[in-house]
Image (tube, rainbow, N blue to C red; front, side):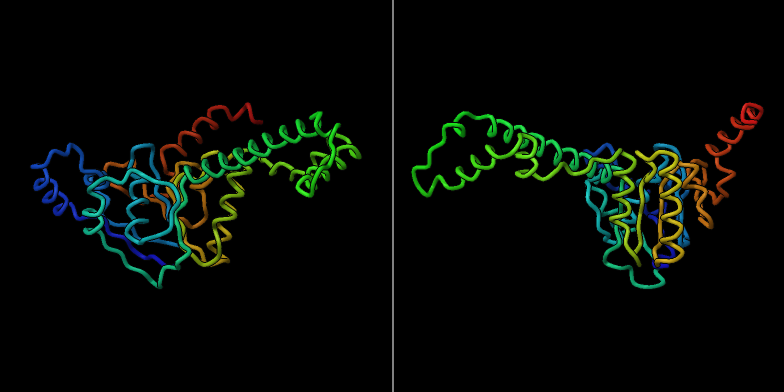
Length: 284
């Protein structure tokens, strides 16, 4: 446990700020008014804490506020308005021990960027491979004559091209493609690489791009990281697999007033349960 409690902006102070700044030309005061709409005043943390809610419920906003207030590492940009600093000044938090420097927030955008970069690397290698094929077939190598020491590197290419097959020539001159995994495999690799021992991690909808099998793997990975490797997690999700994390404290942001619930009491999980119960005979 690193972070024990986080208090969001007081509603009265929010109203005072908004009423004062209405004199400006701004039409939105985000993140003001988002969490207070659900009466989310504070969250008391456990080793695993989950913010549950559908899109627009404010769970990602809450994570961004916590991340910025604590000064955690993050990679991708987010919707940071002119009023963020004003809002953060109204927030408070309590810790049980110092928050490690390697603590960070991981979003679905981080994972998508990682997968896109991997594909770009592979595409770059593919382009270079085509250039090498052209080199191999280029007639200038067939009629090459060395005229000076400046031609030495070209001579080595010619010698290699004459003594090897086309595919062997390309393999020897270019590293193989970076192994491109499926989206789910790449996403899981990213989490495995970024989540280290003894740190606080904020995960924003980590289930994106993950199959059910990979979500279950990630669930076990989070469970073990919290139990054995000194990690604390705050997770925004609506995945029933992630919601079923053992011992997690879950805040339901879909309620008019935020409430703590068991994962089996949540709306989307109940919907799955009722669907399967309705078709129970088909599974037997």
